[in-house]
Every structure is written in structure tokens, then in C-alpha cells.
Amino acid sequence: MKITGTRGYIQIEDDDGTVARFDGESCLGGFYAYADFVCWVRYQGEKTDKDRLSLIYRATRYGKENHIRILFFDKNYKVMFETELGLKTEVYRSNDAFIWMAVVVLSLCFSALLIEILDVADPVYSLVVNSAAGLSAILLLFYNFMARRFRIVAEGDVMTVTPGLGRAYSFPVSEIVRVLRETEPDFGWQTTKKITIDTGYRQISLNRGMDGIDDMDAYLIRHIDREKIITKEVKHKYGSV
Image (cartoon, rainbow, N blue to C red; front, side, top):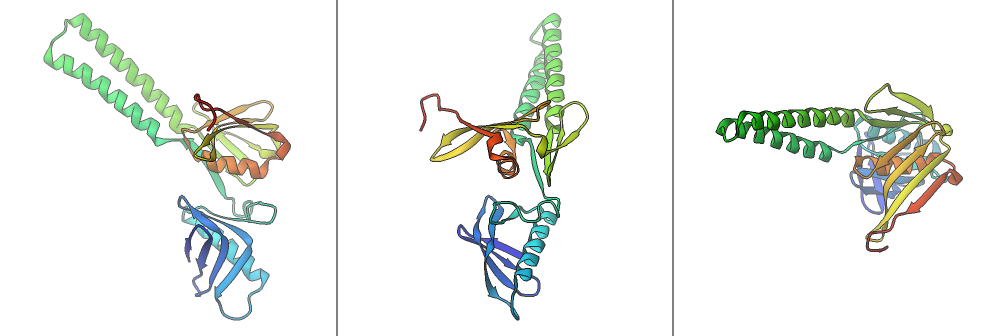
């Protein structure tokens, strides 16, 4: 199966040579299409609605198996076969934070090592610097471990949270009582800066520094009742654009 796309449609070429186009777009490596709008470009015999659904199912499954985001939306803007195929939406810490922490740790260790090699400080000062560098490195590595462990996975109608410390836990999205979305104008678009998920007994916060926050934002909008979602626009420090 081969899947390509433009800003106006996505095209699916099946293994049997069938080619179909759906209204939609290709964006940031993913493919998003409306399931009801299909144009059979190349095919054999008469195509039915059953063939359309079968192609959507196989294309979605292909995307899941090959780690390609391929989503088809029905007329109610629900993702087709999301529950049947167990499609996952994940949020985790961005690698940028880990790179920054690695730079800090290496800088501290290099400074302490340089002082020791050059022998430009008295033993007490060297001990203080080495102790501070070692403690800072341990704390940063511990934070790095917790940050890397943190992950939220939404699969079907169930969300699983793996915190930095402690055991993972799951809950159905029906338990969510409120979702607070904080957005900010960004070149004509509303960028989601922070999401707070409230289940009544737990609060889970996501921020812009996490990978997958936009996908999770879309997932919550699809699965949570509109009256439970509160969107708050955060102004720029120099005013709204």
C-alpha cells in the first residue's frame, strides 16, 4: 500500500492496483481525510460503500503498523475505527529538554575536572566545586529519568498515565469532568500552550514543551463533551496579536 497527499487530498494506492482519493490533507508527516468524500481514480468492477470502508480500515491499519498517522473522520468528526484498531495518541517530554540537561551536566563536570587538572584552587575550594558539580549532576539525571518516564497514552476511550514516579494508572475518558485549554495567537493561528485534564480526583497538565500535545488536544476535543471544555486565550506580554 502506498499513501501520498497534498494540501487538498490524500491518495491511497492499494496492493491490487486500486487508487482512491479522499478530501483531506497531508500535514507534518500525517494524513487526515474525510471518510465520506472518495473519488475512485483506478479500479476494477463496481465499487460500493463496503469497498470504501474496507479501504479506510486497511489504510488506517497500515498507518498504525508503520507508525504513520493516518486518520479518517466521519460526518460527526469522529475518527474511523479508532476503537477497533486501538489507535494511540501519545504525549511525552520533548528531547530538547534532555539535550539541554546533558549540556548542563557535561559543563559542570568539565569545569570541575579542569580545576582539578590545572590545580588552580586550594583543596577546600576544589572539594566544594566537585561536590556541587556531582550533586547537580545527580539531581539533573534524576529529573531526566522522571521526565523520560512521564507519558500519557490515549487508546480508544481509555487514557493511561505513566508519572515520573509511581505506578501507571488508567481511566476512561468519560471520567474527565473538565479540560482547560490555554491558547495563544501565533501568526493567525491559535496555538495550544497548555492543557489541564481534570478527572475530579486527579489533575494532569500538558505543556507546549511536550511532543504530541497537538494530537492529544485534538483527541480530547473529539472525545469530550463540548460543555466540559474551557478554552482560555492567553495574551502576549505585548498584547494580543
